[in-house]
Image 1: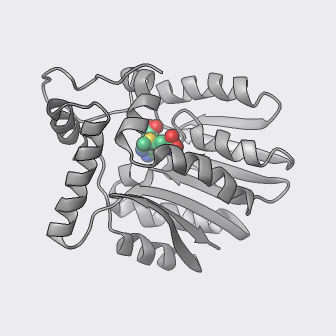
Image 2: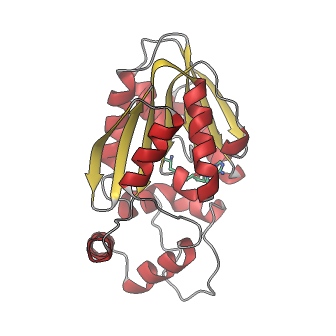
Amino acid sequence: MKQDNIFSTLKTPVDFNFDAAVVDVFPDMLRRSIPGYENIIRMLGGLACGYAQNNTRIYDLGCSLGAATLSVHRQTRDLSLQHICIDNSAAMIKRCESKLKRHMPATSVELICDDIQKIKIENASVVLLNFTLQFLPKEARFRLLKTIYNGLLEGGVLILSEKLIFNDEAVNQQFIDWHHQFKRANGYSDLEISQKRAAIENVLIPDSFETHQKRLADAGFTQTLQWFQAFNFSSLIALK
Ligand SMILES: C[S@@+](CC[C@H](N)C(=O)[O-])C[C@H]1O[C@@H](n2cnc3c(N)ncnc32)[C@H](O)[C@@H]1O
């Protein structure tokens, strides 16, 4: 696994984007930046397994290198499923394609390089939005959730992982401090932490749990359960 040191030297501030340099170090970046990432990946496969229906589709929106799809695949090998993986970063899709071909050669996988806001969802039993919704403009989020809801079969689920903000300013700051402490413990310097924060703050706009819960209910989901939280990173499952 190649080590992420993208922000280790002083840089002119530019907005973060998922380019080839990021793709190259992405597994290490995720593991050292998102508390619980590896647990979420491992466990969401098991969760999805309880809802995946034979002869349906599994959508991975903002698939990056396909970690979530692979996890679902590992737990659902006995079902006939079509995996649809979408990401608007060409560099991510290219790397994802070679990885999935290697690890799930006999499974139907369609890789699409496009904006998830343009995608049609049909015959889906599971939709994954693993740390992706937070990169969409806020005003576009409800529309995407509605599209997902409409494309899900009865009994289907959306698994939604996100960075959270907290309405109480002091509580919010406490979670941010804990997160930065987690990154420091994983070897990131203060310069790396502050430069990454500056690069990502206009790009990753988090919502609160309450906002997610209400928006999911407004989109039609009958129940939302928070199944994982580590500091200000959480994963929810929303049921149709
Ligand atoms: C934090 S990564 C997701 C991690 C990945 N789901 C996983 O489980 O490892 C966010 C991904 O969403 C993609 N993305 C962001 N906005 C997008 C959009 N509007 N349409 C498609 N992909 C998008 C990025 O290119 C990036 O690969």
